[in-house]
Image (tube, helix red, strand yellow):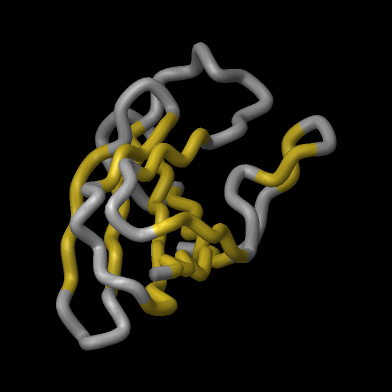
Length: 99
């Protein structure tokens, strides 16, 4: 498993940080060089209070709840073949929610 910030045709798969307003839906597109390729994309969100949530990305994007509290949280993305194998890539992003 490798951890990095992948660049696809000038765009990073996931920026190093993203800022959103509290109480609004959070939509995070993921940029792949081949968006039609089959892959499994899992995400985990660790809140700054230690609580965690996780799920699967759909259609190369992550939709998060508008109920995430204000703070700086860690979003981790794991990308692998359709069935997670030894070929995985891990991406991290600070998710900043402003009040």
